[in-house]
Every structure is written in C-alpha cells, then in structure tokens.
Amino acid sequence: MGPARAERAALPRPRVRPDLDGLPLFRGRAAEAGMIGLDCNESPFPPPAAISAAISAAGELNRYPDNASVDLTTRLAERYGVPSAGLTLGAGSVDLCVRLIQITCGPGDEVVIPWRSFEVYPAIARTAGAVVRKVPLTAEHAVDLPAMAAAVTDRSRLVFVCSPNNPTGAAVTRTDVERFLSEVPPDVLIVLDEAYAEFTTGDADPLDGFGLVRELLGQGWTNVVALRTFSKAYGLAGLRVGYCLSATPVAELLGRVAVPYAVATLAQRAALAALECEQEVRNRCGHLVRERERMRTALLDGGWNVPVSSANFLWLPLGSIAVPFAAHCRGQRILVKAFPGEGVRVTVGADAENDAFLAAARQFVPADTADTARRASFG
Ligand SMILES: Cc1ncc(COP(=O)(O)O)c(C=O)c1O
Image (cartoon, rainbow, N blue to C red; front, side, top):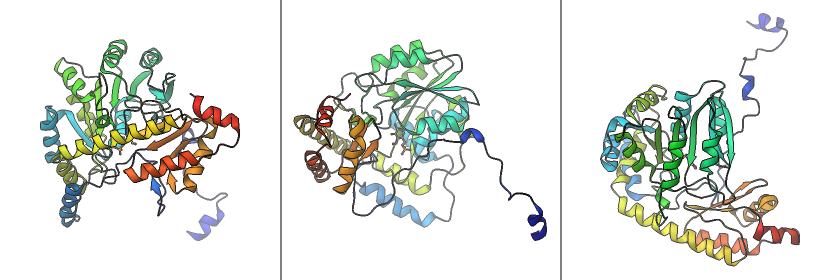
C-alpha cells in the first residue's frame, strides 16, 4: 500500500460533479448562546404535549421508526379529509421539496421559482442537474403568478409557488392560483409550498392549498400538490416533520425516492401529540399574528417600509443597508436574517423579544442621510 501510494503522481481524489461548483451553501443558524433568534422563522413556543410525547418515545431509540408513519399519516388523513394514500411524510417539508424535484427533473429540465423566495429551492434544483428559472416578485414583494405562468417552457417540469412567500411574507389568493393553474400546462407539477399557511388567518381570499388540492384531486387533477410542515406553527422545527398532499401516483413515486426511516419515531409521536392540541396551536398563531401587526405598525410609525405579511415574519426591503442593519441588531444580541443588497427578514418572536427588536430598530442610525431616505422609500 505505502510504496504504491508514494509512486502515484497525485494524491487520490474522487471525481465529483463539476456542475456543483458554486452551488449556494445553506448555512442555517450557527448555535450562539444568549442571542435572541429572530432569524429562522421558528415558533417561540415549545409545545408541551409534543415534548412529553417525544420524551415517552425515547425508550424506543434502539428501534427503527415506522417507515410508513402509519399512525401520523392516518391522523393527518382524518384531519384534512383526504385519503392516506395521497399523503407523504418527510424529514421536514424541505425533504419533500427535494423529492418532488427528484421525481420530476433530470439534467437540463427546468424548475420555475419566484425570486426572491425560499433560498433552498435553487440549490436543490441544481443538485438534480435542473436549470433554475427565477421569476422576479411583484413591486409589492409578492409571487408574480402571471409572470410565473409565462416563464414555463416545454422544458419546465416543476413550479414552486411559495405562499406566504419566504422571506417577503406576501400571500397569493385562491382566485389568482386558480387562474394560474389554468394557464400552466397540465404536465408540469405545481407545488404549493404552504409552510406558513397557519398564519394567514384574517387574509381575504386565502389560498388553503390543502383544501384546493383535495378538491382538484376529486376532479381528476394530478399535477398540483401542497406542502405543509410541523416546523413553524406547531413549534417542532427541531424534530423535522413535513407532509405533502398529492395524487396517489405522485405519492408512490415520492415513497420510492425517500431516504429510509427519515422521520424519527420521536418526531412522529410529537407530531401526533401536536395534532391533539389544535386549539392551542390556533391560539398561539393568533397571538403571533397580533404581534406581527403590532410590530409592523410600530415600524411603519417609525418611518420604515414594511410590506404586508401573512406569515410569522416581516420583510424590511432595506437594500444596501440590510447588512449594516443586521449587524446593528447583532450588536444588540438579536439575530435577524440579512439578504445582502435586498433586505432583512425578522421573525415574530415572544413579546419581549419583539420589544427588544423594536427598540433596536429605533436605535439604528444609518451611516448617512441618503440611507435614512432609503429606509422609508426603498422597494
Ligand atoms: C417556504 C418554506 N418551505 C419549506 C420550508 C422547510 O421547512 P421544514 O423543512 O422545516 O418543514 C421552509 C423553512 O423555512 C420554508 O420557509
């Protein structure tokens, strides 16, 4: 071994895909003690019943989980009035985003996405060798459905509609989505990503993609799916459970490309327990929606430009001062998510955390007066 290796001209190196060069790296949050985390759109409320259920399940850690998640799937099917065969569980809804691309796209196929939107979409599309077509948001920071429909070509295989859109918070209406569905060719898979659906209470003409897909399935449509997650409203981001409603053949394919045993027993049991506390979840979402509006009003009063949000976060289209503003917040021990040159996304947290953020925003002194003007007028 030793001499043979020494004789080699170069050190051994695997041949890897050159097309992955420059693939954007999802960094997520680095653990940092003592910070107020308003950067990941998490719930500030740990869910007590789900925690107890997860602790009770810990005695089974030596066993693989139920790969089909039968109990949770059955419960979700009852909850939404849909057949179990159309429900697929994943390790977070991001796992399902990945699998939806895997079952539709090969090298050179196109994925159409709104932009800016969930930052993971381009990376997972490119990982499959697919080409990403980014469609700019409207001036109101919303998904531009007519432009998305116009961007579909005969190479397009999948379209993500993110509503409410991460990071801008704008939601599309059911009426607009229905029009969009009639404009997209029937062989393109349309994914309604509703990670923040539970925060749209009070919206006029809300999408409710699960309800829409249920109706469409009844009419024989098989090219529209909806995604939801336990990570946001249910407060289970740390356990990774998401779910997809689709036609049965799509669900079967999603099952074939799944990583075995991806949804842990702790996660399945916690999600089941969380579903038993729906009223509590609704109350918490209602509270966060009220907090969102309190924060928005305070920011608007302070001269900030803050688009309407239907999610558990707000978008500040700060342009060139996004990074300095996030750095200022960090200096106050508050983490927000900066998108350099575009804006800052701030999650609605616990009341005191929101107060701390509003105080930090009030203290922010832009580097020059032009920035002050931009704060109010950008976007
Ligand atoms: C729009 C959107 N979709 C999907 C996800 C994935 O969530 P999870 O994998 O935790 O279910 C997120 C997470 O931030 C999101 O913002």
